Image 1 (cartoon, rainbow, N blue to C red):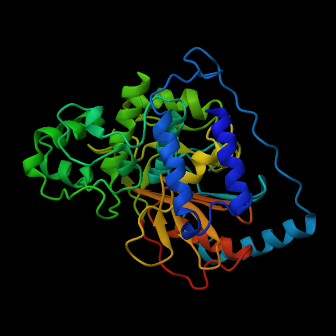
Image 2: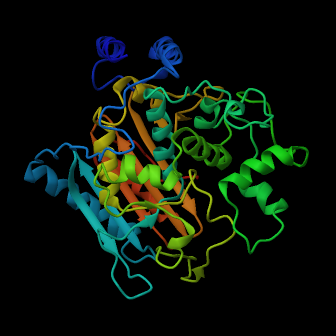
Length: 412
């Protein structure tokens, strides 16, 4: 398998070049199909988990950031400050903003105070909402590399009684499952809002109360962003590994990647997790949907998320060929620059440039996590006082290239 992976990577580089291999989808549709076929051929085989066993202590050696010339750094800081003064300085934003180039932090700001009067700091973890999906998807792809699952597997293989034909792990990853969103059907059907819903409850309602879920459509007919998909992916991770999702993510990603302030929220964290607020600073209490994870519920910091970028830019966690799959667009039925891969939103521009990102929103928490591949730039904004200001961080990308010629609203 290692030899095959090396051959695939060499082929990708020869066709697309090292920096261009994740760009225009038209150029590598056949190549993507080739990789998927290789993955299918190698699924469920016994793959040695070198230094990745249940007892091994993982620690990834992340790459050091490159030195940024002082003149270039000063230019970035000046333009970022202009953005900050325009959108953030006098707003209700409480959170953090970070810009990194080539793995080096060139700009960071921390604004506001927490409920205990402590100022927001580099170690203040905020709920990153749907940015959590980048972790869940990557964990699934890692398990495929380890031969523990195949993304073409029917979900019914993992959950007896799951009667949704055509729904595979792949259609969960790229939001083409056609499943209804649990945020809506649990709101309607869950009997006691004082009792918190678990991931298993979402699965059980899909199985046992299917006739009451009229929003389900045939699988793989269209893109439909749906949190149910990632709640189920978290359960698949638990099924395959035999470990709770929060523990697996901690042991396999957060701790090895030195993400010291990152964790998956569980009920025991209710008293210590950073709360969120309305636009007018009113506390938003935890609700009955706050225990479901996989689609959300990771708390992190801007610096920890930069370490996530660094890990993904190596082959330590995911191979190059797997990342080609993750960053490929899978919903091409509508024209336009926007698309979705495996856990990643993307903008694909006519000139070949590609922005890989994910936004998040849950209660008063908003998050934006963007990776500008050509410029090797990561931009992150986290905020827990409800507003769209975190999404304005995308405009910081214009410091490096005119990605956003106008100040358009960002949806999530």
